[in-house]
Length: 211
Length: 211
DNA sequence: TAGATTGTTAATCGATTAACAATC
DNA sequence: TAGATTGTTAATCGATTAACAATC
Image (spheres, each protein chain N blue to C red):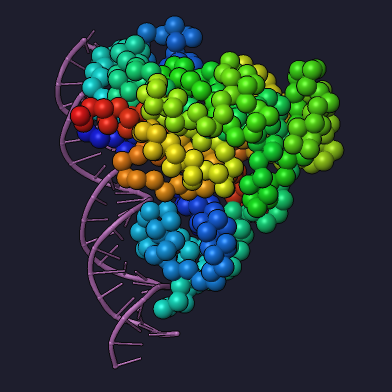
């Protein structure tokens, strides 16, 4: 199987959500490429190519078996095995992420929440007792945790990223508002909240100008 | 000026952040396309094309004037005029968004927070008193608010989107875990939290397989 | 059979990169 | 002047779409 690029991965995840949110509730067993396409507003050929790429074969005149597609996506994206993650920063965003139900079907298991603020330590957020940062390394090592989710203020992010890497973490999901510099082999994804705003703001401006 | 596609808009926003986070603190007055390129890990030619597209001229042997670039991006993306927004859903995510400082330099002004839960109404979150949903329409109309930010459970999102549209909102920033169907002329951006997870999960899986 | 849908190749389109002249 | 950097055209690459045969 070829390595997939970012866009393909995102499309695969969208098919996955499409199935879980629409097709499963509708108790559909088969779905045509055209129907998938409409969901993500793209071309049916694209869908057939994507599904072919992850090894799913359709049935002519019928479509694709929903379950087969579901399993193939899970296998390809690695959603079958559970991945343990810690959240650093028990603020509002950290709490929102720790309590987000949708991660379950993606195999993400948040096992601990950390914060520097002594006032927060011991509090229970989304079923997790907030831990002091001092225990970060020991918990990561003891439980073999592979992902760290950063939801701390910009100034605190880089040193904490370093600590995560030193403790043996393999991937960082960064919600802090700074770019991180970490060694090559660490997987990093920077979730930049205000990037999405660019699009909305731009289109609102165009709306105004066209009148 | 041509209409810009999603990718270009995202790059423009990244240049903008690059300037604000790196170049302004470093008190740089000029920046070469190569330096911009390194920031976003792309090619210098791309940067020069983007900047040319928004009407910025550089100086040979010197680079681009930081302030000129900043202003051109603000003008292009419409970040100069302030845009008023309401947040629907005063949960953890809603609170995180309402209290996010980074929106200020993007011209986003969150003016009200709403919730259905009577227990939350009257609470102060990030300087905003949580309003009852009944007042949604009147506040939007009275203050001429153009953006709605949805951070409610999946089941509640569609009816609330309809109410926002009826009240005259022009853009919806959707953090709920469902696709919305709204009329053509409404600008919608669906921020799908777990899409990013696909990438992390996929690369973690590959890491395992390669050993 | 007729019709619908896949699977796949070819054509198109756009985005990225390379090359290099212009010039400060 | 020599060197660095822009500005722009051309070349490449990849992704998207069109076309259509295969076939259930």
